[in-house]
Image 1 (cartoon, rainbow, N blue to C red):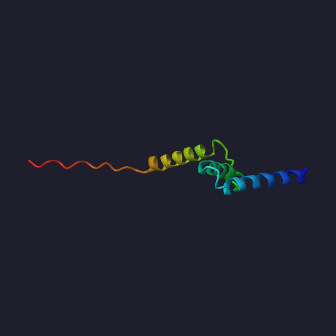
Image 2: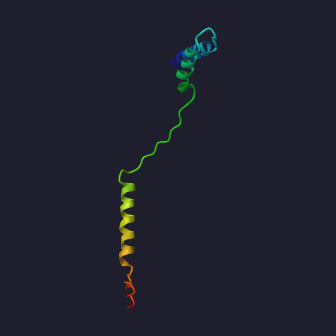
Image 3: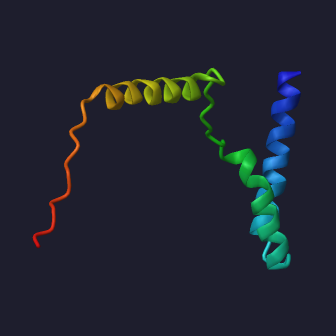
Length: 86
């Protein structure tokens, strides 16, 4: 089975190569063949990650709560505006 797949793969690659190199074929056809074969020749690299759905939201809420604690615990000094001179 593996040998059959390898034989098929080599035939497909050879057919693509012949189509691209055949200058008698219209340019748009050769470009389409090249475009269609690119995903099979060049691997697509992707990054996949798994995160807890509430993880970021929970951390943001904790940060907001903690920063509110700091702000509300600070003493505030009221500065009276200067009185106008008569």
